[in-house]
Length: 268
Image 1 (tube, rainbow, N blue to C red):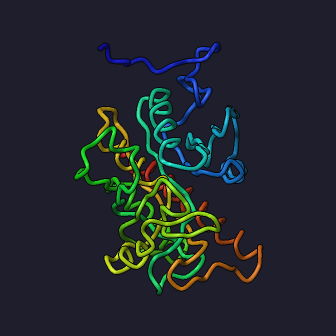
Image 2 (cartoon, rainbow, N blue to C red; image 1 turned 90 degrees about the horizontal axis):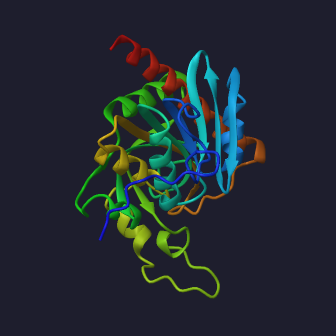
């Protein structure tokens, strides 16, 4: 049986899902699930040269303090993320992916609005298992990890460093029950909490795994802002404004991390 190796393109010759081709995506890519967050991120750019939207994917490329940068929204889940990583990687010669997401905490001491910077992701999803064996470790790139830590410290943003669990599902996959639907693993939250896992989210392991297994020059890492705590059941900010401020802090950390990486890369 032949191996399908081509990346599909559309009528404009751009990659099928992102609707982007070579030159449309910058080497520094800040990603998220929510298209509104990508647009919010791009408001910090000095200039914008590319705006593309296709299905759930939103791509905005411009410059931030002179640095070529892309805000990329992928929609929810590791499967969407894998598509975005693969197609974006065809459009730029080398790529750094920094996920800026939202998350639910699994440790009592983690407060709403704190950041969780991922060192390693538990691959509790099936997408990355098409690319790497089950025991493959999804690790953040050291340079990206260091840049995120430095950025959070400089900006005075509280953060936690450790292991993230990436799932394919928001409800039963994260130990939640919903009316009319059973959860086959109701003890999942407690088991992961006891193991020291910091948080649940739905994309990080795809970035970390694909960047590590690729023969292309890719780096990946990420941080998520805590919007709820599944152990303490804290799910409410004091106001919508406070929640918005927490997300703004996340975006500023991501942008500062890009500055740190760019400065370091220019010395090489």
